[in-house]
Image (tube, rainbow, N blue to C red; front, side, top):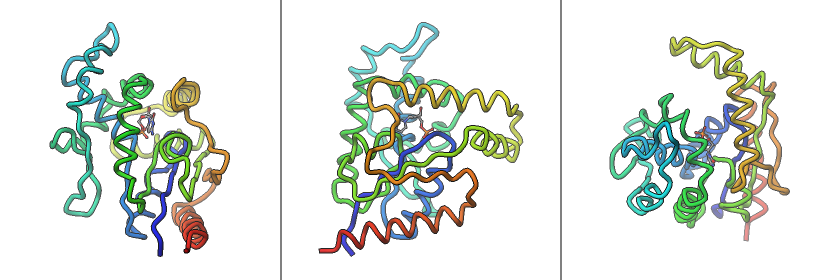
Length: 231
Ligand code: DC
C-alpha cells in the first residue's frame, strides 16, 4: 500500500500523542512528536541561560539555532525518545520548568521556521504520523489524512489531574483547568502557526470516547485515506 502523510493536530491534553503513537506502531509508520521538538529547544535555552526573569534572549537563541539538532530514536521497548545534540532528553523535556517556558519559545518565528524545516525533512518520504498544532495547516498542508482532535476543557483537565495523581504529584483540579484554558488561549491566538483546524481536517471530539474507540476510529480513517491514494 502506498505510504501517506498523517497530520494529527489539536488541543493540549486531549490524548493526541497516545493515539498517534498507537497508530504509527500498528501500521509501521514513523511517529514524530513535534511538541517534543519545541520542548527540546526550550531545554537548550534553559541549559544555556538564554531564559531569565527578564525574558528570552532571543538574539542569542536565534544565533544558536543552527547548533540545535533534534532527533528521535526508538528505545529498547520500541518507544521513541527525543535527542538533543545526540543526548537523550526525553525525561528532561517533560519537566515542569520546560512546560512553563515552552509556549513563548514556540511562539518565536525563527524557532518555528527552523522546526518546520526539520519536520518537513523528517516527513519527506511519507509514512509518518506527525502530531502537533500546525501540521495540517503549515508543515504538511497536502497531508492525505488530517485529524483535528478536541475534547471539552473540563474533561482534559480531569484527565491531566488523574495522570498527576497516579504519579503521586500534588495538584488541584481548578488550577489545572485554568492552565488548560490558558494554553488553549496561547496556542490559538499566537501570530505564527496558531492552532486551528485545517479546512479539510476531520474533527475528532473524544470527550466521551475510550482509548480503544479512538484507536478504531483512527484506523478506519487511515484505511480510507490510504485506499483513496491507491495508484
Ligand atoms: O504537545 P506539547 O504539549 O508537548 O507541546 C509543547 C508546546 O509546543 C505547546 O506550547 C504547544 C507547542 N507546539 C507548537 O507550537 N507547535 C507544534 N507543532 C507542537 C507543539
